Amino acid sequence: MKSTGVIRRVDELGRIVIPIELRNKLGIAEKDPLEIYVEDSNIVLKKFETSCIFCGNAKKLSEYQGKLICNKCLKKLSSLSSSED
Image 1 (cartoon, rainbow, N blue to C red):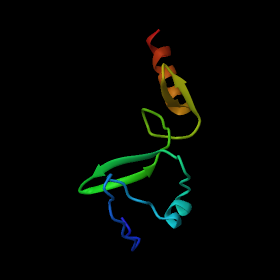
Image 2 (cartoon, rainbow, N blue to C red; image 1 turned 30 degrees about the vertical axis):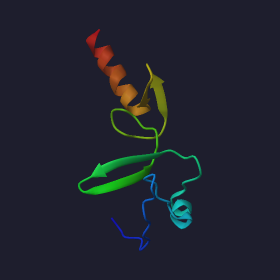
Image 3 (tube, rainbow, N blue to C red; image 1 turned 45 degrees about the vertical axis):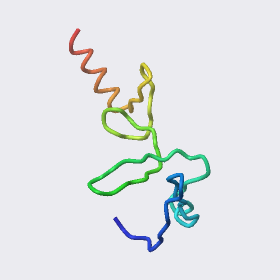
Image 4 (tube, rainbow, N blue to C red; image 1 turned 60 degrees about the vertical axis):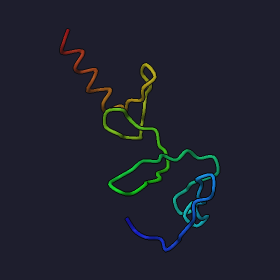
């Protein structure tokens, strides 16, 4: 992880402000969803992107029973069901 040299304090409600320069560079706009998770001893903020539940691919997604699946995984699933017949 690369340090930006920017330091922000957490306010009394637990919030921090992400500097405009970083938001612009990463394409984060007002109201965009951010994913927050812990990796080792770091808190990671990542612009949320919908993706395939199997491989994580974010392109050419289809919805099946409320879950997103990419075309490649969908083809693999289709071939599995065809081979069982």
